[in-house]
Structure formats: structure tokens, C-alpha cells
Image 1 (cartoon, rainbow, N blue to C red):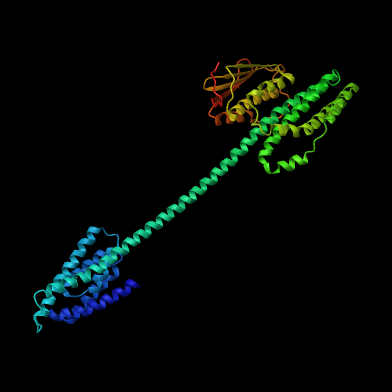
Image 2: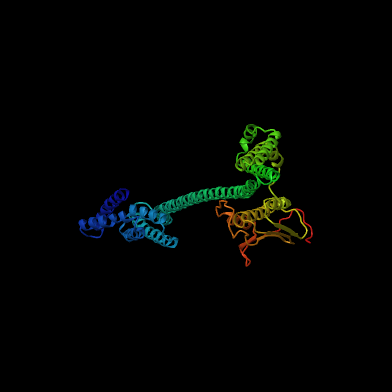
Length: 448
């Protein structure tokens, strides 16, 4: 609508000025009016072809018409995306044409006037008129064009920043999801290591308790006590992990866990012995389980308090770990090469868990097989290897459930610390698990 209105005004102006031009040129007035209408209506194309509008306005300048078209055309040209050299050239042509026409017209008017204004009058008026008709629209157009480009640049930058913020938010959500997944995986590994090993040994001891209940009551009592000890250890480690997950509920959980007198443990063990002497194997098994339960709830609170400040299992606990497997009936040899030293907690815990899970797999899948545990403290790394021979029971497992995540969890633990993990069967019919962890020692000492 704006362009159409400006085009109508320009056509009306050019039509009136065209009539005067036709009179001065001794032409029919209709010719001048039609020519002015056609020339003035070109202004409607100023947005699409600003160069053409300015060229038309320059072309009709000698006929003293198209002043509105020239002003609006120069403004549109300066505000457009046309190259600056083109704008400068067309503005110079328009200024020169207006200067020449104004000079000639003013000189004619002065020649017919009754007074003499002096020789300076014509040039000054011509220059002022030409600059006044050319400079203001040109400068205004340059300002509007620069402001428009600045606003467009700011708008594009805002859109780009919004896209970057959206991308950063998506990445933050992905990192949060990845962190949650990693934490769930880590907790799952810890739960697997604790429950699988302790409960596997408890199942093995329970089977031994059932087997010897009638033949050797004293051994049955010892096995029941071992089951209770392992249950307490498992419960302590589980409480440590749950304490991390529910730190706010630790006080409530401690208050809810009422300690049971240690006399109850002795009473339960005595009941297991009496049941064994009476020849009731099933009752002995139940009594052994009761002893384990009483042992768990009676001493787990104190054990949890004592180990709450610790950082989990370490290489110093490998001796007790191997001893537990020996008490469960496995022939295990432990050999340590090099001078032991203290490593970072995560390295110590990972090394312990690898050996623990490997021994658990031997209990599960190679009952009765002999195992060798080797640990080597080297200059820049620590290596551990657990190897077992063929099962003495025809590779029959102990009937323990397996989720198939033991080796996967060990590989994840070792890889997370930048180590190397290898596992596979041996030529002798056994299985071997090897892991190498980079050095992360807290107290450096020469390797042996």
C-alpha cells in the first residue's frame, strides 16, 4: 500500500510536470501527461529494482520532473543490499544531473529577472539545491540499511544462541542420563560382587553343613558359625552401599535395627549342635540359618559402624578372602610377587573385586577345582591372575544362579581405570582371569 501510494503521488507529480515540459517543447500536452504518468509509476518497483528507479529518475531530470521519485529512489537504493560502489555511482550521477538542471534553470530565471544578484548566486543555489535533493535521502537510506542489517545480525545471533542453549540443555540432559546410568551400573556391580561372593560361600557352607550334620556335629557347628560370619560381612557391605544411597535415612535405619544380644547367637549355635546330635539334618540346617540370621542382626550394626569410615575392601584383605574360600572346601594358593604398597582406594578395590569375582566363579562353575591366585606389584602397574584347574566333579557347577554379568563387570571395572582385562579357558581344561591396572600408588616404594 505504501509503494502504491507513493507511485500514485509520483505519477501525478510527473504528469503535471510533463504537461509543462510538453508546452516548453512545443508538444501536445497529452504526450507530456502520458509520459509523466508512465515515468512516475515506475516508483512502485522501488523495492524489487531500486537501481532501475534511480536510473529512470536520472533520465527524466532534464525534463524537470520526477523529484519525488528521485528522493524515494535514492533512499531505497541506499537502504538496500546493493554494493556500495553502485550506490556511490548512481548517487553521483543523480547529484550531477540535478546540479546541471538546477544551474540552467536558475540561470534562465536570473536572466529574465529585473535585478542582478551577482555572479555567486547561480552556483550557490545550484549546489545547495542539488545537495539538498540528494544527500538527505542518501544518508537516511544508509542509516536505515545499516540498522536493518544490525537488527538482522542480532536476530540471527539470538536464534543461534537459542539453538546453542537448546543443544547445551540436551547435552546436559544426556550427561545427566549417562551419569545416572553409570551410577546404576556401578551400584549393580557392587551389589553383584558383595552378594554373589558372600552368598555363594554361604550356600557352599550350608551344603557342607547339611552333609556333615549327622556325622560330625562339631563341624556342623563350625560351619553354622561360618555362615553367620559371612552373612554379617555381606550385610555390613550392603549397609555401606545403602548408606550412600540413603544417607538421609541412616539414623532412622540405625534406630530401627535393634541389636540382638550375642547370647542369642550362642543359643542358636547350641540348638544346631543339639539338632545334629538328635540326627535331624533338616532341623540342623534350619538352626544354622537361624544362627546366621541372629549373627547378622546382632553384630551387623557394630560392624557397620566400625567400617563406615573405611573405603571398601583392599589388597590387604586378599588373605582373608582366600581363607574364606579354603574354609568352603576349595584348594587355593596365594602368591604375591614384588613389594606390596598402598594404592589409590579405587585401584585397591578394583583389584580385590577382580580376585573376589574370579573365586566366586570357581565356586559356581568349577566345584572342587584347585585355584591359584597370583598378585604382582610392578614398577608402574599391579597385575593379578586367578586360574583354576578342571573341576573334580566333571565340570558340574554348585547349582548357584548366575546372571552372566561377572566377567562383564570385571572388564568394566578394569577398563574404567585404564587397565587391561583378559579371560578365557586354559589348555588344561580350567579357566584363567587376568587383569593389569596402572599404578596409582599413594606411597611410592621400589618394586621388588
